[in-house]
Length: 351
Image 1 (spheres, helix red, strand yellow):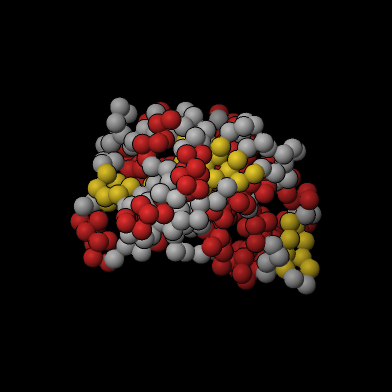
Image 2 (spheres, rainbow, N blue to C red):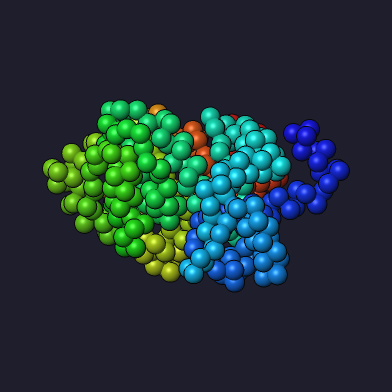
């Protein structure tokens, strides 16, 4: 870190230059092939700036262009991987991870540089970080339970080819919502199992119907057997949603959504809606894993990023069931700021 501080004092413009080229190279990699104008819009930089930086990257054989657009070379991919670690050091990410883990009383916090609210590639980096961590903690014989959502769908697409097949079973935590198929927990579970060479079971129960209908479906022997399997999960991977967004995905009427807002709901997980202090203000009927079931799970991983989700993340993780949080710099910095202000509070924590 001392080396970075010296660089900042002597050549402060170098830090800005490195981060700019890292952002451009990362965006080309995730969007390739991509044209210069589209790239300029993605990175929110003037086209002249992008053109000048692309010329430098091309001279260094890090990118090339064909009729379809720009692409990252193999050397560019290696440089991008090396730059990621350097940017983490420049921004003090390791210190941020340690500080947030202490504040939240978590075993580990993993932070990727950037803010997914303003840069779509940050969500992809967060998904890759999740895939890498998950691959490292999976053990044969366990049950892995996963939720749905855009972030988890991205995780399911981010696994590199695995060196061996995992003798595990992947299951969804809950039934499906009336939304895009690719974002449903069943789809995420099946995709993860495919990448890991694992087996999977699907829960064909809608999660946005009335309590009577859910009770009737849950009484079916095959559903009961699957629910028992889900509740034996050794690892749970779940996303973090803002209360309003999740309420709309579940088809909750506008009047009820307004009531949730009045109750101060900011975050949602497993059908529970939490206010800023982490208190449950509403729970939706559902079939599958419930919040109290997490107490019996060995590793609970919460994944979510973007500064706009910081408050929701704190509300959800205030129950102390999570052991790992994977997020981005925007959300992490905002969580630290909120905790430093004393709101929301984390039971037993420093905030």
